[in-house]
Image (cartoon, helix red, strand yellow):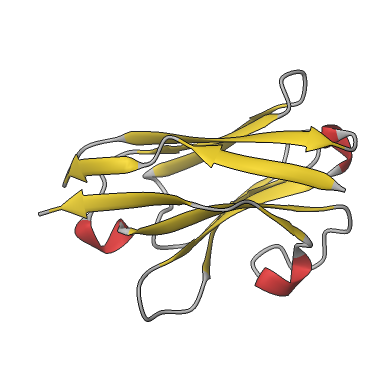
Length: 124
C-alpha cells in the first residue's frame, strides 16, 4: 500500500506558473512509477505526465509538452509537476498516481494508487 497526498494547487492567471507536489508514504517509493492525471468538470480523467522509477524516463501529453515538467526525488518520496505558461484549459483537479507495474503509462487503469487531488484554476 502507498498513500499519496497532493499539494500546491491554487488560482493563477493565464501565463503563470504553479508547482504541484505529491508526497508518498508506505511502501518503497522507488519501486513505483508515478504519474499526474487531471479531470475537468464534466470530462474524463486524462493523462498529463508520467515518470519511471528512477526518473530517467518521462512521458507527457501533447497538450502539456514543453510547458510542464515532471520530476521525482526518491530520497524525499516526492514527485512534482512544474507547470508553466498555464492556460485556462489547464483548469482541473490534478491527481497523483502510482503503479508497481507500469503498463500503458497514459491509461487510468494502469495505476492502482491515487491521491485525493488538488484543484488548479487558471483565469483568463
